[in-house]
Amino acid sequence: MKIKKQPHEIWQEYEIGVSYKQSIGNKGLYETVKQNENFFIGNQWEGVNAPDLDKPVINILKRVVSYFVSTLVSDDIGVNVEPFGGITDDDGKYIMGILSNQFDEIMENCGMTSKNRDAIRNAAVDGDACMYFWFNPDVQAADNVFGRIECEEIDNTNVYFGNPQVWEVQKQPYIIISFRKMVQSVIEEAEKNNIKDISGIVADDDPNGVNRENENGKCTVLIKFWKENGTVRYMKTVSNTVIKPETDLGYKRYPLAWFSWDKIKNSMHGQACLTGLIPNQIFINKMFAMSMQHVKNMAFPKYVYNQAYFPNGFSNRVGEAIPVTGDPNMVLNTKTVTADMSSQVLQMIDNVISYTRDTMGASDAALGNIKPDNTSAIIATQKASAMPLELQRMSFYQFVEDYVRIFLDIMAENYGMRDVSYTDENGETVNTLFDFGRLKNLFLKLNIDIGASTYWSELMQVQTTDNLFSKGIITDAVTYLEAIPNGYIKNKGDIIKKLKEKQEQDQMLQQAIMGGGLNGTMSDMQNGSVPETIYGNGSGNYYNPDMQESVM
Image 1: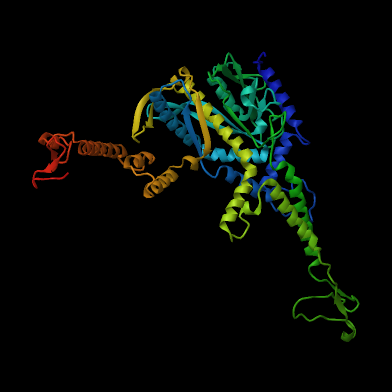
Image 2: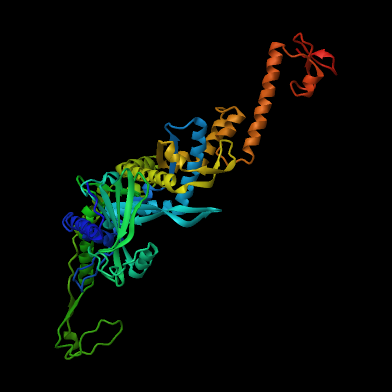
C-alpha cells in the first residue's frame, strides 16, 4: 500500500484513529480509561450530585489489581538466550556471553523492573500496555562508549495502529504515536533538524479530550512508523509541519511492544479487568452510603415532649435543670422506638464483595484473608487461585520476549564497534572489542526463554548444588565448583585448574599401580608422576626406599 508522508495526511490518519477509539464499547476508549483510572485510585463518586449523603469508598478493585500485579511480577524476569544456528560453538558462547551482559545492562539502565510492573498495572486498569524503544546517541553509556537504548511507557490512548482490527504490532501497515509537548521544545527540535518553516508549530487542543485541562502552550506531535524495503522508517510531524524528515532506522521490527490484558476479537485494544466490574463497585459504595445514612438517622433515640410544658425548649444535657410551665408532675416525655436495619443489607454487601473478588480470580486464600491452620492447604489453594492468571502471565512473557528482540534489532543497527565485557565459562570477566554489526551478518536466530528469575536464580542454584553435594549425589569437587554460579567463589577458575591437575596425577598413579607400567626412577618422583615415597622396579612391585619393603 502507498504510505502517506505529508503532515496533513498523517494528521487525517491520526483523526481516523481517534474516531475508532471513540467508538469502542458504550463510552469509547477515552472515557472508559478515565473511569477505570478514577475507580482504581478511589475517585469513585465523581459526578454524583448528593450533597447530604456521605460518600464512602470500599475499594475492592485496587486491592485485587495490586494482587494481580504482585503475582505476575513477584520475581524479576530472567532472559535465557541460546543460538539455534548460523554460528559455531565457540562463537556462540562468545556472542551469547556478550548479549547476556548487554541485556542485563539495558534492563538496568531502562529500569525495566519497575516498568514491567507499570505495564501490568496499565494493562489491568486500562486494557493495554505499550513500551516504545529508541536509540539515544548522545548518552555516554561507558568510558569511550556513547549511545544507549532508551524506553518510554506509552498510554494505549496515544497509540494508533494502521489496522486497528489486528493486535499484532509487526503486521501493521503503519503505527502512529501521539505526544503532547511544549510548543517551544518542538520548535527547537525542528530547528535542530534543519526545518526552515516553523510557522505551523502552534498550540492546539488535544483532539481526544483527555488532556484539555492545563494544556496551554502545548501541541500534539505525531511519530509515524512504517516498513519500506524491509526496514522500518519514521518521521515526526505536527498537524501541518514536518518536525523530523523521513528517516530509515534500519530495523526489521517496529520498536514497540504491546500487551493486552484480555484480547478482544477483531480489535487492537484489550479488555481491562476493571471494566466489567465497575457496576459491582458502584453498588457496594451505594449500599454502604445508605447504610451509614440509616445509622445516622435511626441509631439514636429521639425524645417527644409537650411544648406547652416546655416553653423554653427541652434539653437532654446531663445534670441540667429544666424549667417547666404548670405542675411538674404532669410533665410527660417519651422517646421513639428506632427501626433496626435489615441484616440482609450487610449480608448482601459481603456477598457482592466476595463474588466480585472470586470472579476476578482473587479468593480469600490468595489475598491472605484466612487463618493459617494448614500451611500446605493454603499454599495449594493460593497456587490454584493463581491459575486464572496464567493466560496473562504467558502474554506478559511474550511481551518481554518481544522487547528483547527489539533490543537485538537496535544493537545490531546502532551499537557498531564498542568496548564490552562478559563473563566467560571460568567465571572470569573479559573485556573485549565487539562489532555488533555481526548480529546482522550472522542472521542470528535466538531461543529466548522468559520466566520468573527463580528459574535461573543463582542463590537457588547454590543451595541446590550444596544439597546435592552434601547428600553424595555430586561427589566430584570439580563438578560441584563448575555448577556454582560465577562470582560466588574467588579465583574459581584457578581452583578448578589445580583440582583437575591433582585428579590427573591421581589417575596416573592409580593406572601405574593397577597396571605396573611405571619404572621407579627418581625422575618420576621429581616430576610429580608418583609420590616421592613410592617408586617401582618395573615388575609391578613398588617399594618405600626408607623401609625397604614392598607395598604391594
